[in-house]
Length: 108
Picture (cartoon, one colour):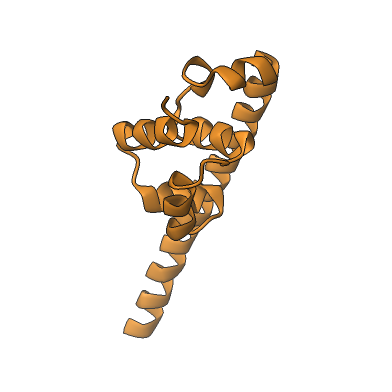
């Protein structure tokens, strides 16, 4: 029997998302992500969070998710993640602009 962490890892690797970026969006370290792929007790909440980030519906792959989560729960959490992703993107853009500004200041 394939365990849910194996399903999650396969989906993440197939998605093309970089593991370091996935970990960053989750607020975790890359090591945490690698450890999670080895953890047979990875929480359902983490599975759903990974699914939202990589845009994968694990309720189709993992039977226990179908029993425990209603579509409305998932839809609400997906919306929350969209805002979180937008916020992270904005912060990254701000950091780049700040670095450019500081580089210009040093050049004067």
